[in-house]
Length: 253
Image (tube, rainbow, N blue to C red; front, top):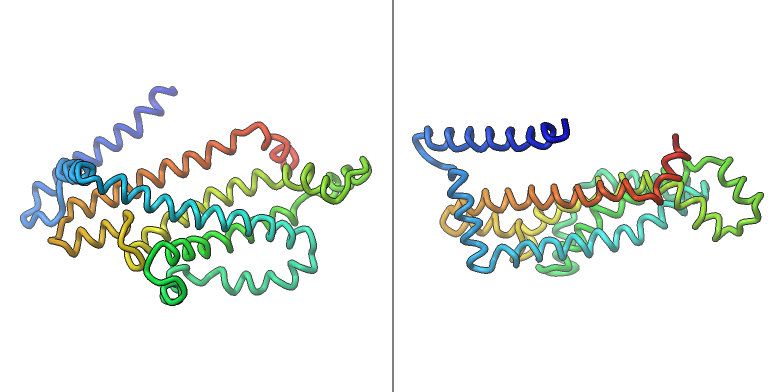
């Protein structure tokens, strides 16, 4: 059963690749490249040293924007969930800002940071901060009172209660929020690179389109974005298997 479950995605991938090739070959206008032409495009990028450069540039921006957002948003959200008056005061503003697309901030980010890494990192930070803050706030609010009271009965201080009861209890929900938010951050960096910077996978797509309609490189950039996004999601999903999260899962069940 395990082998079949692993072979099934490979079979679907092979079938889709063959369908893609057949559709392109049978088309009269040949607007899109064949799978092999895309592979050659990726090889060309690697030979020119651009593939690693663009991948590293995109990952650099995502790492900084996402990491800073997580470091600030998670404690902030837990604070709001822990102190209900703070949540009542701040939550309406979070709900007003949350539906605003991060891409709507592009003109302001360019005005503040210019065209470069700063603007893209700022957009990723905005895209990550609000979802993580709301996730952490809801997780902190849902901590069971019986666990908090048990910690107090054992004489835990407020700091010990936060570190030994609150954080282990909310970690499973935070991991889910981090996983979803990382996907959002990866989407935003690609869009930001199409406008605010001159490197990265998003820039590659726009530049390949403008510089001679190199659609083989356009599709190559799209495939690299999807592959890296899959690897990032797999990495975040693996965190859910950490032993430290077992306490939180048992507490929430």
